[in-house]
Amino acid sequence: MTAKPPWVDKMKKKKYFTLYELILIAVLCAIGLAIKPIINPLIHIVSSALRIPGGSLSGGFLMMWMALARVIVNKPGTALLYGIAQGLTVMLLGFFGSHGVLTIFTYGMPGLVVEVFAIFVRGRSLFVLCLYSVVANITGSVLVAITVMQVPFLLLMITIISAMLSGLMGGYFAEIVLNKMEKYKII
Image (cartoon, rainbow, N blue to C red; front, side, top):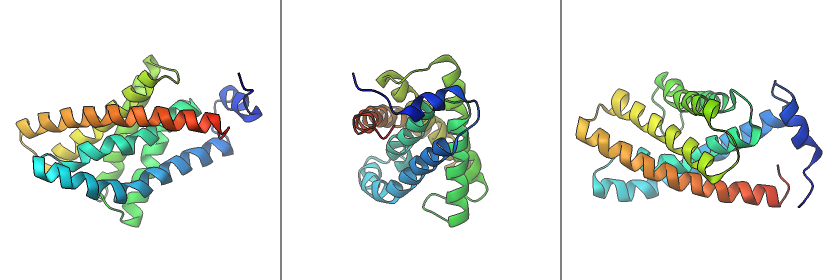
């Protein structure tokens, strides 16, 4: 078994966020925003043919970064901070997927839901990453479907199912990324 870097033990002891943790959250947030313009058009090719909202399919690959931030930093408020920071960035810079002031709500609520689930489920397992990705993606997809798109009930159910499947895939890929980050001693 390899030795952990010295900052990993320090991250677990303090209740406030260290500079390293804030930078890690910001980097994961930036990665999530950077891949959105790449993933969304590819997913929309499939989703438009199937007549389902594309955000619910691509969301799992975007919410995996929130799940990673929560699992790596492992402090209350991490996912909420991630969601609000990402929402503010999208709103202020006018990135793809901005819904005005509502953006802070639609990006922040998945973080809040992840924090609620983190009270009951902790750890670094595949299950935890999948759970966080699924609940974040379902929350974000449902909020956008109801508040912005105002979809009918049947389409909302299809959105929830596709968000769940996408969240599971995102959690699986998050596990792969987490293992690589540990292998190369990034965390």
